Amino acid sequence: MLIGYECDTRFIAAHHQPALLIDLALSRGIDSHRLLRGTGLFYADIAGGHAKLCPEQFVTLIGNAKRLLDADDSSFLFGQRLLPGHYGEASHTLEHACTLHQALERLQRFRALLSPLLTPRLLLDDKQAYLYWSDSCGAAHAQVFLAEACMTAVVAMSRRLSAERLPWRFHFSYAKPRYVEQYWVHLGEDLTFDSQLTMMSLPLEWLHRPWPNASATAGQVAEQASQALLASHGWPGSFLDQLYEYLQANIRTPLNLERVAQAFGMSPASLKRKLQKHGTHFQEQLDLVRKHVALYLYQARGYGNDEVAAYLRFTDTTNFRRSFKRWTGVVPSGLRHWHSVAGR
Image 1 (cartoon, rainbow, N blue to C red):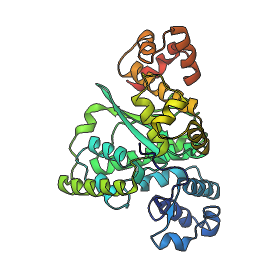
Image 2: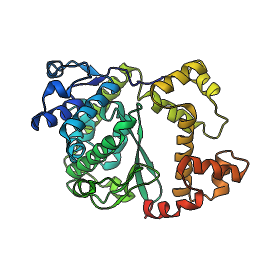
Image 3: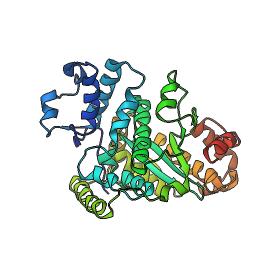
């Protein structure tokens, strides 16, 4: 099984996403030496066009930029510059997407090249499209900054390439920040905080409207080249992505550290150490996937408590409710308000 990139894997081109943040900071008078402190890089390395960062270094850069800029709009301005970006063929796959659906599918598939720190995941039901985000590399303290930047990036990209404003709605798994006016300016006013997921959604029909100025041929060629680049890396996403997807695919079977370690071709101790390196542990990852599957079943499939419990192989509904509260902070009946705002 492919293990995926890790928090210390150097593969992020420094002159791609990191350079956008660096240029934003430099434009506001931030000294490059202070900005790059702790990253192990100098500005000349980045300007040379050959330096590679690992996710840990990128997160350090984000922390420095956030502290030195000390401005509420930093993440949003960074996000406006992110997509399609100037990242070679991967950016061309987005630039020449024929519809929003195709663009979001490509964003998912080439996430290692286009969104290496926060993984986008697209889900559809019969009325809505949902794009939710999960941590790729254990960048916990940068999650709010990344959520703000990534959602702004998708909004800005979809507005520019569709030539119209799309009716996005937003959910955030954290409390409303004091600078909420920046959300209003850059995202809109349809916002829900303290939600179960960090997610954006819109009515399904917007996914398939043709985009002007798209080139299906250019997009297809860029897609092939991007796929070849990923193949040369040897993985499509991060280690945490691979683990998430394995757990999701096998969520109805008995799962424990030992069985999953065996599937990944390593000892339980090695898997445990690898998870610790990314600031997490097995039960946390398993609970995260169970939570996401349960929310999907409630929201998109309209399942009741007994059906969700049975799907997740809980034989005791009381035990399921107790587990669900551990995953989400609420009992299943407490989700009613979330369902109404997520799916309206």
